[in-house]
Length: 366
Ligand code: KG4
Ligand code: ZN
Image (cartoon, rainbow, N blue to C red; front, side, top):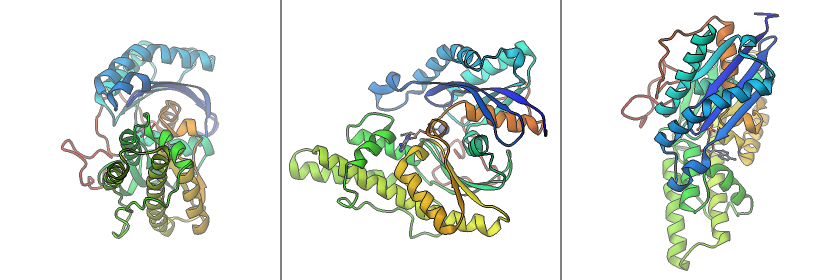
């Protein structure tokens, strides 16, 4: 593929962001984002305290056409200048995934362009190649609202999972903690802002699974510990003050960061034990937007003498540029799909790894 220019339209609709983007690669690895449109749905779900799948799916259906049109206009291109249509085919809320897949199939059928189904997690995991041109293999920590795992990225299609959460994802924990402290959704940025003004040592929350070897993580107990601490304050003082809330957020964020840092240390040891040549640890997914966490992980890497990279914030949270990029990587190795491409609610990144405990009745989430 040296010397070839590939331009791909990406479509993303797995959760509560409707997104479309155009990305171009002159030489792999590394791309140029020609456009990136993201329409969030926060206000649509605000009254419900969480994402309502049916509302999300309906909003995707209503907005996707326009979002794609805007992405093409922003890129200054028409469909004839596009080489392929990449779409997230899972894992995610099935109604939303279906909306994107159906639109992509329609576009591919109408234009005759190749269709490429992309794993949403692969989109996050390959982002450091789009932004930094990282060479394989690198270690990735994927931390988002629905997922949490360490994986060695060997290629655009081979991901070796080293460990992951056995219950909640950290973003989910941030969102739940925000909810129980009366903060807005998505919880991550709100908790981070409060934590900035809080004392992380006032409430000492547990560091789950640190006593267990390996890189698996758990976040549901932490969320319960915050709930108990909040109730304790309420019982003593009849309510929580602004400073109580800040301190609870700071203590919680510090616990998440400590656990992720220690598990990253362990994952790095496994990865660096196998790797030859330059080693890099990358963090991706919505929670990677958390500044204290990025700093903690950067320190872990400095101590281990490993490179560190984190995509810019707008590419950490859900977007379609990462899907277009993953599409470019797959197109470059000739991996395209037919009209039988299916939307998948579950789609593990490493299909050879055993499903995680608590990964649900329908199979492995991650
Ligand atoms: O990757 P993403 O946009 O969607 C998923 O695929 O899940 O991640 C969204 C998650 C939400 O749970 C949100 O609260 C969290 O990322 N998040 C953060 C921050 N910004 C977003 N968590 C902690 N700190 C942040 N600054
Ligand atoms: Zn995501």
